[in-house]
Amino acid sequence: MSSAGAATFSGLQEGALVLADISGYSKFIAQTEVDHSWSILHELLDTMVRSLSGRMDVSQVEGDAILFISGLSTPEVITAVEGTFVAFHRRLRDMQAVTTCPCSACANIGMLKLKFVVHHGKFSRQRLGAVEQLHGTDVIVAHRLLKNSVPSKEYVLVTDAVLERLPAERREVFTPHSERVGGGAGEGTPARDARGGAGQLRGHRRSANRARRLADARA
Image (cartoon, rainbow, N blue to C red; front, side):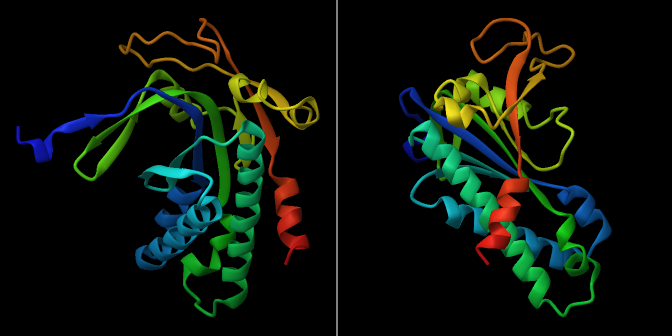
């Protein structure tokens, strides 16, 4: 293999793994015009990236989701996430207010929601050409938590590894929540919690209602 095509690895790093996912997008594109739905998705993804610019790095764009990494302190990470909820809903509201397009995509912008999974852990970065990927067990945990049983389409779900790095007054706003995170049939991956033991991963969720109220207040 030529050196230009060889994979390169960084050393092991530690920090926040933040997955931002637009809820309802699969149903949205199934029911709407492709060209307009794509433009709306692009605008909302760009809003999230701009909101977190300078505080988090984009590691991967995964369809309607973005994986961010950050070396910020955990309280700063949560503050940045809350600010992005505000930016997202403000952009949604503005698009709804100014559009005169009668298509289904533009008429149903309001069905889109935003959820975050936030984990703290270790990972390495692999680069192959212009493409970067993260590797590590903690990266897998963050991705698997996107498929969860939280009874809402909009929330912040954090793990114990995040919660234990927050001051008491900020921990209190989260509601305890448990998820089983492990391999599917044939994968042979044991369930694990944030501390690495077998069993339940104890996440903590927070409703996004406060962020939506802030978006309205800061109009």
